[in-house]
Image (tube, rainbow, N blue to C red; front, side, top):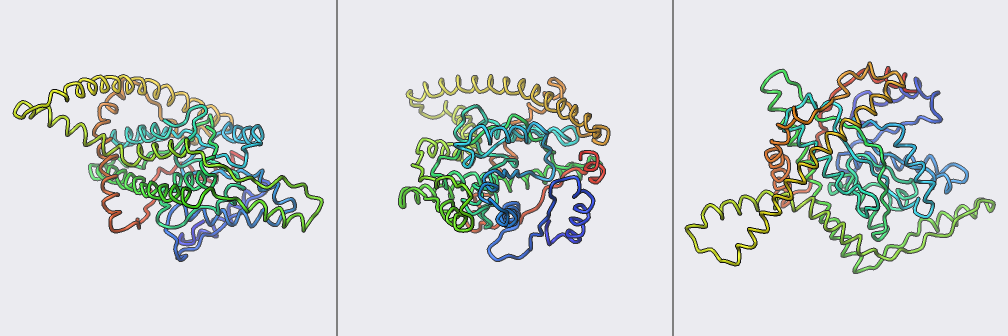
Amino acid sequence: MEEGEVGSSEKARSLCNQFGHRFRSVQYTVHPRGIEGEAQGKSSNLAWAANEILKIHSTKKRRRTVIRNTVVTIIDADSQLLAPYFSAITDMHHSYPETAQTTMYVPPVIFDRNCNAVPNLVRIADIFWGAAGMSGLYPHAAICPPTSVYSLPLSLIKRIGGWDTGPESIGEDLHMYIKCFFALNGNLTARVVPSAASCSNLSAPSSGIRDYIRAHIARYNQSLRHMWGSLDTGYAVRRILDLLWNGPERDESDQAEEDDEKSASPLIEMDEATPVLAPNWINIGTLTERLFEAHFLPVHLALLPIASLLYVIFRSSIHQAPELDWVFNITGYLRAMAALGMITFISLYENFHRLNVNYRENEMKKVGLADQMQGGFARRQLWPNMLDYCLFPVAGAIYGPAPLIHAQIKHLWTVDLVYKVSAKPRGSPMANIIEKIV
């Protein structure tokens, strides 16, 4: 809970009293405001909560075993995870013991809750935002940065010192991924969770033209916050230079904890200390390329077509080098291939959306929640939604290159961003939903 929210402690105690008996343990923390060096946002919230979790488990017997077998899941307030998500990460954690302590679990994200209640530009922007996150989620992918929702072992959180809290960590999910990645010298294991995290689009009342405009402004501000995370490219460069200059990072947390536990209880069986991992330069190179895709390529994709179009229009009045003919021929074929790829994605996405909505609705029916989630199962059909895809170039420019350029220009004189939480739709009373779930 946030100290800045009036009545947050009372709300937390009420929830604990009402539902605590239905769980093995329900506890809450209150994150203070005004901690020196902290920037407001999700990352500083998680840093505080992670420290509290470690305090809880450090008081238990066999604490190293408990910490190594505790998996922490990070979600946003509007995220909905289904039972297969937790079954999958539990299975993968125990099925791959050799990498269990160095693994991040990443699901695809889909905006399928209220997509029919938002403007076309907002809807298609979120569809392709989710698609960008999914582009790296394939079997045996080396680099899988998460989007909002992910899980990782508590031992890894402890090993890297938890989440950063400064302004450079505003892109919490990617920043944490990079921090874990370099703490393991590029040997972070990423496993794709075959259960999508359902999320909501921005809340967009449709009572008039003002609300319609406000919805687009809110989505732009959200994109600006996302693109503010381009600071992570500089962070990654610093970590690469540090790796080159100082060599691989050593993990001394396991050895120190092992010594403490052996002195406290000689009966506890301990694993060997984690060895120093050699830098995986192939993974580091792949991460660098993915950061280029995220923080540089969107601007190139906007500027290059404009420049090439102007060149084609005015080339008759200027001297054209014949060597450029083959360049334009090749790029013409590449554009055609990109168009085919876009058509394939559109077809696959509609099927993906339908499958996720149907599966989520069936699970909610099993627990008696489907009737209370009216409006939470937004269905799509391909042909009625073709306008969305036709508007993609407009949405892509407004919510891609524009906020990215905006953010990076502002980085010239500040790295501080006033964090504004995006408005999300409100559903049924939480108490009724939780009561039926548990």
